[in-house]
Image 1 (cartoon, one colour):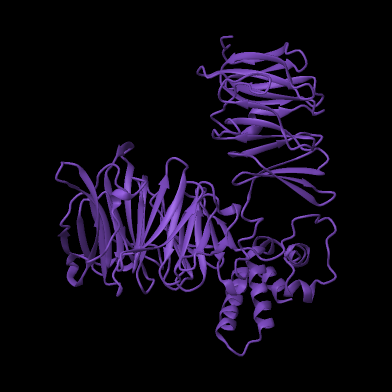
Image 2: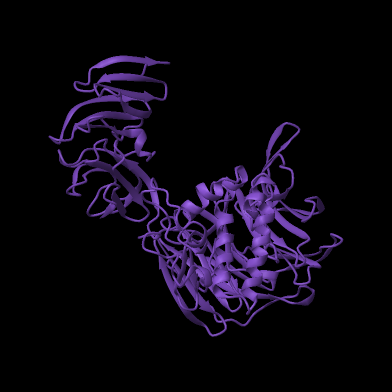
Length: 631
């Protein structure tokens, strides 16, 4: 009843905050029974996951929340008799790690939790600083967008949470109607309550490819420190905006730099000339002392010349140094944890794909990592165990931050979607969020006309075939699987993409039979013998735009680039006889292809027009172009 009233009053945010306070109190109190604490936790997860429908209608408490929630205390106490018969498959067995999801509708360049963990600060490519609620995902304040394009951003927040410092590298600005390219970096301090700019500290001229200075408040919040790759450390009074001092590093032109929290440690990678006039890479850790004095720290560091990746990145926090390398021969990512006080490598982990985002948390000794092949994962550094696999929603994460007060991680993907994740083992259970199903999140899905058969392409190499009526599934490993998959209308065939070359599969697409799970026909990027291999490769790998099944599932039409500029072939394959029925050459960019519902005609859309063909003979029925292409 209380939740229904809060929904009718439009106070779902207050309901979430109230339940969160109650949940926190239950965790700290030793007198609360486990059953009660679990019930409060389930109520909190219900509010977070279903807050969108609850904002629309109180009736969603019964039609959405209790029906589609995992089996938990709420469903056992209040919905034991409620079962929705049309939920055939997909009701979760447990709460997943995801807490909230909010579309910020902006390109986020930096992400930072407030010290109290209740708010999240962001900086975007239009120079805006915004503050969001970590419990509800609601935007609290935002500065105005500027007529600039920001290419890099660094953020820090004062210890009392009242000020936000930003360092933004301006790539382009508009002045009196003119577009100007800039190499400036702006340092600002903002009021975290009102969003107003307190100080514009400095405009720093930087080099074209520099990411911009790194900034950090001192522990007492009275001082702001700024490091740039040209070897300069500047100190500012964060109350008055006055520069306190500027110091030169003993080394110039640091090619890489990593700054610990509160700015007490700095790691630099710079080059020095050896005896044979070679430029060797050197790693140095610098300690920032009182008054901004910079001195090298006695540390036992690995030799950067031993790294397999010249583009290795570094993350420093006492007493650990994280070195992230990407191996070019297999595009795997290696994360090495180095104790620079003992001079020992204490842990090494390997992940598929190139790194997108790597973040470590000093207090909890945990790491969040996302690669081009794996969604975001949370690892315990000391034990090397996987704590949470965040699923397909975290596939494009480019920024992540750990909450300083709770076992929560915030992430933003390349579409600007903000999500928070629960990584507390008390609620998720040891490794419960790292299930076999979640380790292969769905990237693409297609169904037969009847809806009884479904095929999904997952991250990695897995294709899953689902029989909805029998509630069974089959797994197929496809080497170098791409994201796209299409099922035939009768559910007997499917086509999937392969993106890189291997000894088993050439890059291109492959046609499979669902019964035998064997490839029947393959279009590849390099010439080979027919009829098994054709000549096929697309730079835009959206499969549904360049391949289509006929309504009777007996034919498949594809667009086949020939490797000569914009020249393409249109091919129609007889699936049952494994032969090409007809093909037509076109020297123009293709945008899409589809059979007409009766299956006797085929439409092909180009950049400048379209054509309709006889699907059996390949004869042209009709065409219309803005300008006729050369045939």
